[in-house]
Amino acid sequence: MKKPAVFLDRDGTLIEDAGFLRDAAQVSFYPQAIAALRRLGDFALFIVTNQCGIAKGHIHPEEARAVNDHVVRRLAEAGISIRAVYCCPHERSDDCECIKPKPYFPRLAERDHEIDLASSFVVGDHPCDVELAHAVGAKGVYVLTGHGAKHRAELRVPGTVVADIGAAADVIERAHAVAILRAEGIVAFPTETVYGLGADALSEAAVRRVFHVKGRPATHPLIVHFGDASLMAEWAAYVPNAARRLAERFWPGPLTLVLPASTRVPAIVTGGQDSVGLRVPRHPMALALLREFGGGIAAPSANRFGRVSPTTAEHVRQDLGSDVDFVLDGGACAVGIESTIVSLTSEIPAILRPGGVTQEEIEATLGRKVPVAQTSNVRTPGQMKTHYAPRAAVVLVPPEELEQRAEELRKQGRQVRVLSAKDVAPHVLFTSLRRADDAGVEFILASAPPEQGLGLAVADRLRKAAHPRTSKE
Ligand code: TXA
Ligand code: MG
Image (cartoon, rainbow, N blue to C red; front, side):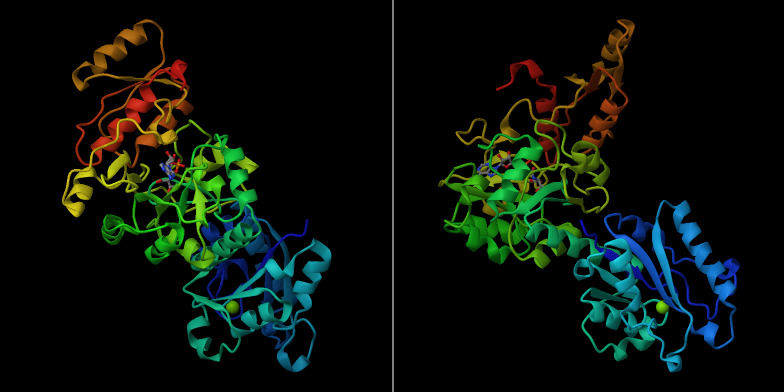
């Protein structure tokens, strides 16, 4: 399979542009460069640099090579592999064929490294970098570091303009994710609640793969995510006033509205029901992805069925490995607990799952009581008692008994971990459960917090985790 590439300009893009560089000691990487390139693991990376100082006699070819070698070595030490450094030693008046923006080097890469130029990128701080992208049918990303700010007005061909190499990596990752979604692949992405495992909501094949990878029964519906509340009317058969009010107040944010489904929602997304869960998340990376994609992304949490939801990209990789086509890394989730699900399919609104928006906030917005549904005829895995379960047995005990109970178990030779009130704070709860599992403990002892505010959702997840696994429903 042909690979997409990123062709990186050197000076002013990866390292500071300090004139003609003669030796390694003069090389200074931009602080964001290494972390940015690490995120581009799906791409073949090349450096393409014009070093006219060689033709002008300011630097010796060997000096230029030493600097390039140093850059490659430093990146290799950071786990980043550069396939080749393409260096043009000429000046424009030489009329060589390799100077940017002439397509010579990307074509070499295409030939020698099986690169798909149409899905590739060129990043640089000079208009010639964006023109190079144009010349080979790739996408150009113009950075404002180096000479970028100075030459910006000379940019004649379309390219995305960003602050620096870090922001360039964001653009590249996002475009890559969108391309995968359009090709009916599946992509894990961050939201402020937990990571989602996304597919084009209109692609039955892609949604089917999500169910398969997650190991989730086909009757359990997925939430459709989109980037703008105005799209709600496309996915819902009608939008009750209460939905409008909640969306206005909490979107983008950790709230899912269950509404009567419009006819465009594929049955595979709703699990054959006539309602659909809708949400606009507020994580900037999720919002940007959804807006660029344009359509709806059907996504459950990006964990295997019945396990703890992932709140970092690393959790997703541990759970799903290569079963997912791409993982967008947006850091740790700020809320850390799933969205609140409010059903508005009947006259009386109900909370189907407590989550990142509190019951109190919802009641205040609607000006009425909104009960937490205890039972439901809807098959929501969030309502299965065995959901959110770590491998270890979770035991809930009152706070004053925690230490004593732990001691008793330890005396029996058991591996025990006690979770403090801090460990069960919403944004770290799932990480705490995973860490205990990673440490291989048999028992996790915790106390449920008071059921107010986000405590309601935490207590809900802890109760479900604590329910004995033998009583699978
Ligand atoms: O915060 C969240 O909601 C995360 C992020 C990724 O958005 N998503 C999430 O998805 O937790 P999932 O699939 O793990 O849980 C969604 C819950 C499930 O319990 C599902 O059954 C319920 O929402 N749900 C989806 N559509 C529904 C519907 N039409 N009626 C009732 N419940 C529904
Ligand atoms: Mg440059």
